[in-house]
Length: 373
Length: 218
Ligand code: HEM
Ligand code: HEM
Ligand code: SF4
Ligand code: SF4
Image 1 (cartoon, each protein chain N blue to C red):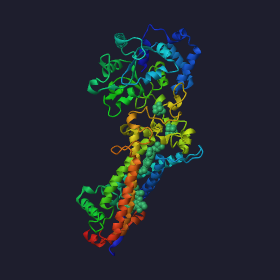
Image 2: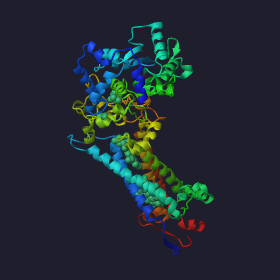
Image 3: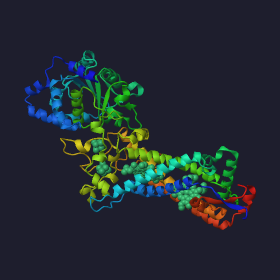
Image 4: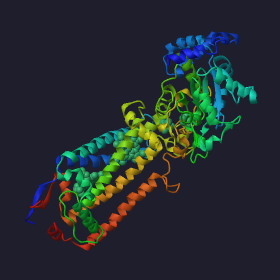
C-alpha cells in the first residue's frame, strides 16, 4: 500500500499544495489544525496523530476525485453538502479536486462526459472514485444509464481504473433499497458489480459525511485504505455496535423500556429495544460521531435504529418497529411467539387427551410384550 | 417378576448431562423469554435487571453447550444405551420394527407397551431431532453472543452464520426453536411418566439412579 502513497503524490503535479490553497482562501492555520484534531478523533487515533495528519495534508498533492451516481436518492450528496468540517467548498476545492460530479458540477452534457473520460485516460490508476447508488445487473444493466452507457459499464471502467473506490451509502455498498426484495433491477453494490476493484464501503442511509471526510483524510495521511471488517467497512467507523455505545444503554441494562410511543418512558429517554431498535445488531459510529455537526442521532432523537448500515437492511431489519421479523410462510401478523405458543399449547393439549385416553384403556399387558422380546 | 434385575443402564455422564441440559433449558427459556419481551421492571437506572438476566442466559448457555458436546462425545465412548446408534433407529430392521411397535402403542392401535432396555425406538428418533435443535440453538446463540466483540475469537467462528442467515434471521430462529424445545419437553415428561406407569419399566427413576429393571437374559 506504500505504493498508493507514491501514486497519490505523483498525481496532479501542477496543482498547488493544500496549505497554500487554504492560505489563499483565508482559512487560518489554527482552523486547519483544529480540523486535523477532529479527524484524528473521528479515526479513533490518539490526538498525537493530529500533527502527522496536518503534515501529510500539507505535503500531499490534491488527488483527483470523480463521483458517480447510479440508482440512488442523492442523500449521500446531500449529506456531503451539509458536511461541517470541511465545508463542501473546502472539501471540493481544496482537499480534493472533484473533476466529475453529476449533481454539483457546472459542466453538462458532452463537456461533462469528456471530463470523466479525460480523468480515466490521463490519470489511470491515480484518481479516487466515489460511487453513490446501486448498480443494476439485470437485463444487461439497462435500468440505469447515464449518457447512453449502463451503470455497470461505466463503473467497471471508472472504478476498475481508479486507485481506489469509495462506496458511499448503503446502496453503493450492498445494493440498499433498490436491491430490496424482489429486486426488480438486479441491483448490487460496487464490490459485486466490479470484482477486483479496491473498494471501501461506507454504508449508511445516508452515510455520515464525517466518515467520508475521515476516510479520505486517512487515505491522504497514510497512503492506504483504513483497516476494514469482513464487509469492507472501515473499523474506525463500523467497528462497534450501536448498542454498545448508546447513551440509552444503562436503561437497557436496568430494564427500563419505552412501551408505547409517547409514554412516560419515551419522554424520559428509556431504551427503545421494545420499539424495534436494531442497535443490538448494527455496526456504526452514530452514537459517537452523530449527525449535523454532532447535534444528534436517531436514538438520541427518540427513534430506534433502523439498522441502515447492515447488508440487506430493508429486507432483514423490517418491520422497523418490531423486534423480530415475521415468520416467513405465515400471515404477516404471526410472530415467532404466537406460532411457538401454538406449538407448545398444541402439544400439551394432545398429550392431555392422550393421558385421558390412556387412563381409560386400563393396564397394558406388559407381560405379553415380554414374550415378544 | 422374578426374572427382573436392576441393570445399570444410564452411565454417570449420561445422567449428569441429561440434568444439566434439562435445567439449563429451563433457565435459558425463562431468561430467553425475558430477553425477547422484557417488562419494564427497574425503578431506577442503576439497577441491572436485564444485565443479570442476560448474564444468567449466557452462563447457562455455556453450561448447555458444554453438556451437549459432552453427551455427543459420550455417545461414541459410552455403553450400548448411550451410543449414537440409539438415536438413529431406522438404520436397521430391528430398529424399524421397534419404531412401528411404539408408534402403534402411542396411537392406541396396540395395547402392548413396548419393552426396550435403553430408549424406546421412537424416543431415540425424537432425541436425534432434539439434538439437532440443540446444536442449532448453540450455533445461533453463540453467533448472537459473538457480536459484542466483533473482532474476537467467537465472532471469527460464528460470524459467517450471521452473514449467511442475517442477524434477524438468526435471532428469530433462536427464538422459535425455544418453543419447539418447550413442546418437546412437555411431550417428553409426559412420555416418561406414561412409560413409567404403563410399562412399569421404572424409566422415570432410572434417569436419576441409572438402574432400570430388565429381564435376566438382557
Ligand atoms: C435451549 C437453549 C436456549 C434457549 C431456549 C434460548 C432462548 C433465547 C431466547 C428466547 C432469546 C430471545 C430472542 C429474541 O427474542 O431476540 C435468546 C436470546 C439470546 N440467546 Fe439464547 N437460548 C438458548 C441457548 C443459548 C446459547 C447456548 C447461547 C450462547 C451463549 C445463547 C445466547 C443468546 C444471546 C446472545 C441472545 C441475545 C441476547 C441479546 O441480544 O441481548 N442462547 N435466547
Ligand atoms: C421432569 C423432568 C424430566 C424427566 C423425568 C426426564 C426423564 C428422562 C428419561 C427417563 C430419559 C431416558 C429414557 C428414554 O430414553 O426415554 C430421558 C432422556 C432424555 N431427556 Fe429427559 N427428562 C426430564 C426433563 C428433560 C428436559 C427438560 C429435557 C430437554 C428439553 C430433556 C431431554 C432429554 C433428552 C434429549 C434425552 C435423551 C438423551 C440422552 O440419552 O442423553 N429431559 N429423560
Ligand atoms: S435504544 Fe437501541 S441501541 Fe440504545 S440501548 Fe436500547 S436497544 Fe440498544
Ligand atoms: S442509528 Fe441506525 S438507522 Fe440510524 S443512521 Fe445509525 S445505523 Fe442507520
